[in-house]
Image (cartoon, rainbow, N blue to C red; front, side):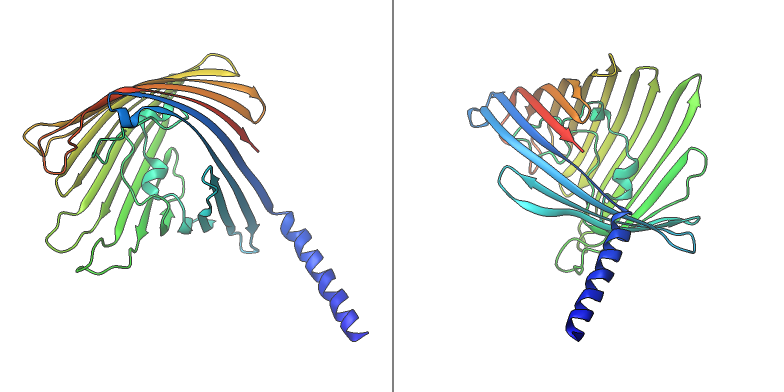
Length: 329
């Protein structure tokens, strides 16, 4: 009887806790199916392929008695290789002081940088032979590795943050800690919304070696159904001095359809001859139904080898087209 009573009490308590927890838990995610065709000057890069990508995100939100907003988020991803993993997991604490994020989440540089090619939903296609670190105006960062990030309280149109990543290595074995900073300011001008963003990422290297540095600056202007973006990114490391410049435009044709186009050029001038990569593309987006969207993307790329140390040895050019169907919930 005692065991039964204890078991019943435990079940009742668990049910109560679950009910309270479920009231603050949200689940979201997506599933993507992709078909890609590539025509390349390098035979090994030619061909067609299919791929899938999916993500499920669990978010727990709670407001403490002292007024703090506490959020825990976990993202699980899976691909066509049947590989399932935890992509991101983080804890954030927000209040009048701003917001602190602990764990594996996007860094401050990625949060506030403006990328010209973001006018299209699908990632632009890079050649398979380039050795360039940059293939667009998105700066090179630590991504969503484990870190601590602080976001300042919003002040009018100004937002910003700083991230710190401890790589856990010493000065004799490799890469050291990373600092990443980003900020963006948004204002209204004559009915148009203008956002100016900038970001920088610095990773300390072994003693006597050049630190790895990357930066981004960009402007986004939205007026009516048109959005235009201009951006520049840089990347500096051993035998690397790269600069990417790009421009993109997106036009909302209707509530269901939009058209985006971009062009990006990347150069590395560390050698006697510049290593160059250009990519120009366009995308049509069509909303089939609520939560169901189709994308058709086509891009034309050209890669020229350079004479610098570490530069690619095989030139490449070609066209990549991709059809994507995405369901979100």
